[in-house]
Length: 189
Image (cartoon, rainbow, N blue to C red; front, side, top):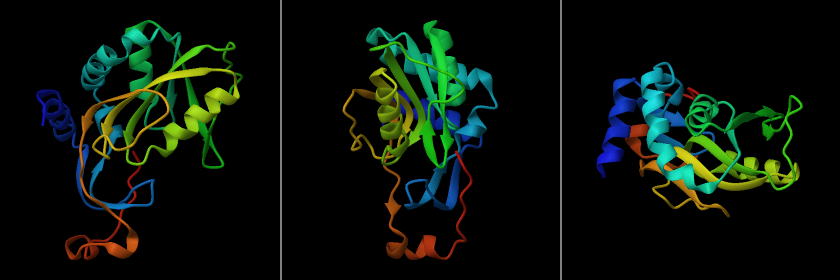
């Protein structure tokens, strides 16, 4: 594990945001570990630090706008936009899909950075890419705090994560005994 990944994990531990138990992830997979980014986002000094690290990976894409995905990418997305001095908007859920709402618009070909807190399979990022393209934007890169797939999830555009971890995930019918005996929880990001 790199020094940066160790720092990220420590920020999550210090914030009480790295949970252990039996969790059902948005992907439908089960895990004994959960990253509850909302706990980190209570502490703006920690959000500032996470964004500082993420900005180093994203600053050269010449984007004009940063898009945060609701809910997990909202706070970190806004801070990344602030540090890059870029416009910030967000996508929000409508019928459990990310949508561009509130009269937000993209100029044709406008370069967009997508910010997300945690990915396992990248479902919300795929939705964001599709939604941005559908509205004329040009998604150029993705920034993620934690990639639970340990780098296996790939998008059609470059993505950068602060920590690539591989906490095991399981299909509902293939749970190990140590997790099966714990009641399930869906704490939200």
